[in-house]
Image (cartoon, rainbow, N blue to C red; front, side, top):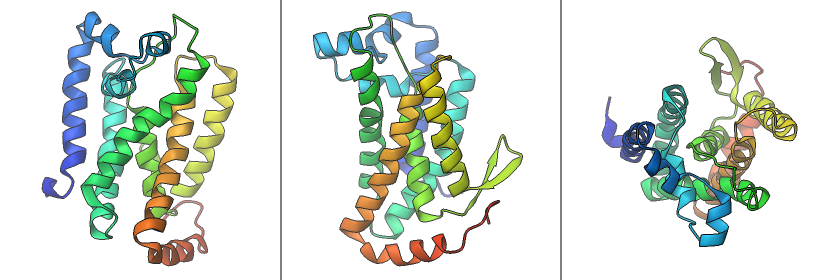
Length: 216
């Protein structure tokens, strides 16, 4: 396995893992770097949109995000490189800008709620997943490692789930960040293709004409 093909993904996973592990036993670190809209707005602590993406609530939260980032992130990083889409620089821009963009709705919504806090890389990871789907919309995805569906069907179900759960607000998951991170990743990939390699739209459109419920 040639890690040199996707070094940014490996570095992101390593940095996030180390920082999250530090946060598990360091409440002061978490308080200084978690997404906390109330203080972000009043004290202009905008850095929290980035630092909170390197924190996680527990081992399972961390594992799930980094597992997903590894499989989808390496694909996107390689695709951006081999198709002339800006390579690792574009990939890094996608990830870090997604951390910020995915949090904007939560910051606006909870800017007056001193108790609201959020953490995790999910918004950026969702952006990477949806960017990957643009290039291979009917690839197979295994939900929970067992249920096989196509990437496009997964994307539709995921968006519907985020909207539904976001409106219910019955858990501690930031569904808004998942939703807007996903939309941002989709838009980022499309705009990147349009600017740098518009010829790539032709094979993508051809793929879309051959749908598959369970993926290929």
